[in-house]
Image 1 (tube, helix red, strand yellow):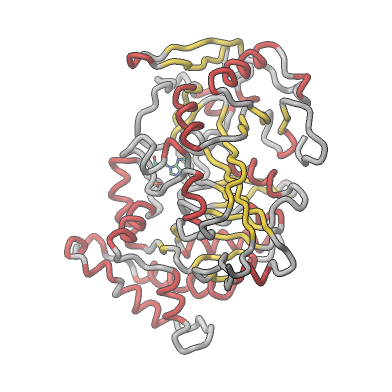
Image 2 (tube, protein in one colour):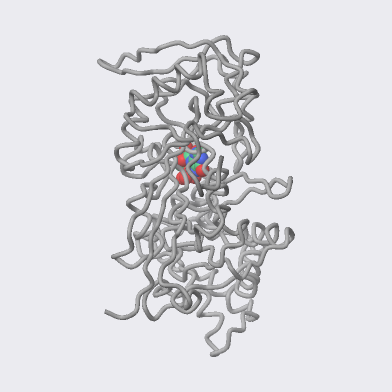
Length: 439
Ligand code: IMP
């Protein structure tokens, strides 16, 4: 066997309908000194929006993994993702403006690119599914149809003169205009034409990215790949894999057809990053909110209807970070959560937005613990004030009972709860073991 880098990967996964606060948790983990060398995204695209804060400044990351903010040496966008060059350019510009090194962002050459055409088709699909309209579904569909455009196709076209010169914009514009999706008779329709400006903008973004981020070959993590060289002084590396969307939005295991187009499960992480087959799974970190939200269409058994969730929506700032849409609100659904935990193989749980369910916002808090015979049964708790919770021993009263019910139902310990929007508002529910960086 050639000299392979020993790779262990941990996965952060959402257990509800997305927007559980995975970005904040992933940022906290990425910042643990020396623990991770690589952060990676393995699914989804600009439909995701991880809201994070750096030195008080808010940043929404769509496809760049949050490890960039911890200045990890490799921040990898894996082949399981889809990328819109125009949006990625804007995202990378924001990251550069904060002083981070954009060359540590590696975009796999196997990633499929969203073009103005896919965005347009998605706009049509949104009517039924309530998608984010970012072109995600059509791009994954075109990948399966084998008519998609990959990074490798456009970047090698640009550098076909043998240099890494990405300046031949006209050639790229010609190329995207003759994009093979036009070969599909079904698409030879007037409404699908893209404006010249949007194609130009797209081509310019591709060119800009070629100069400002790194393009990773398919063998990046293999014995002859670049990771081996970057980490030549190390025997092993640990990867923080950040899931986008969630188990309940997974293309296979979620509430199909009201799901996203990619596989969001931790089991998809190594394939979606391109890790060698013998990379070792480390920990699966599941994230869920103390209540539940959903954007877009689809079933939501515990939904608070007729505006009864509006105060929680306001208090929790439950508006989409990608589309600005108001999120639907509901109570925590333990049978669904158990399904998600078991399928994902969760080792460690983070509960977020505990502070939102305060007496000023809601009189009581309900939890669905059974859906036998299609009837949801709830247990009720008094709303709690979590502002005094600074450490494990502060978890008492109504919130303690709520937490006990959740842990008892799932049979998994909730190790950390989030009691506020800031990075330091994470409280471990047991005393912190020596050497672990978050309190
Ligand atoms: P798409 O991923 O844009 O195709 O949208 C499919 C469904 O997934 C829609 O209901 C979206 O609102 C939902 N969705 C996609 N990404 C996210 C996310 O990051 N958070 C929450 N919902 C999402």
